[in-house]
Length: 143
Image (cartoon, rainbow, N blue to C red; front, top):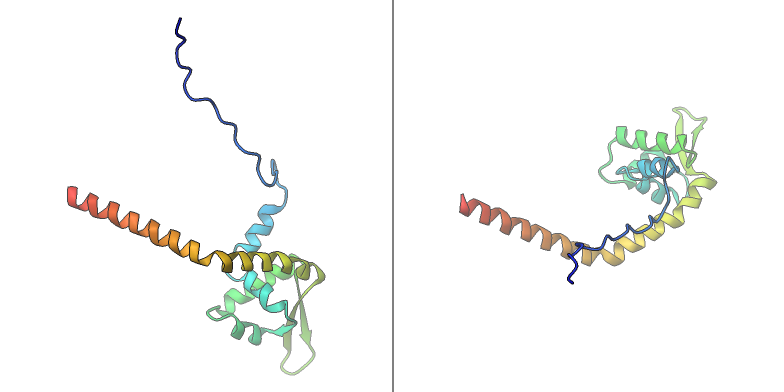
């Protein structure tokens, strides 16, 4: 007697790389490091302390407001130390804390991965863009 086909066999989802049933803290870190400027600030400060204007010049395209927000958030998270130099006018210097320095190896790994995979990412983007153009052209022609 033939049995009815039960359909596809259910596949269990793979285990997540990091278990975060509730709030394991990774979201806070990703919120901070996922913004446009924070990682670049960490990269620049890894070489040593910088005054605000030098840091802004090193980060081409960052506005004073966005840099101020980035360093304040990094300071709040304990990654950056802000020191006001007793000069006239006052000068502000930023440097990584020990906690900030402990992050640099992770940032370096991300930068190395990005550099090593830049050609594959560019090729995947070009392929995706071409597929979307072709789909849009076909849709426009059929209407």
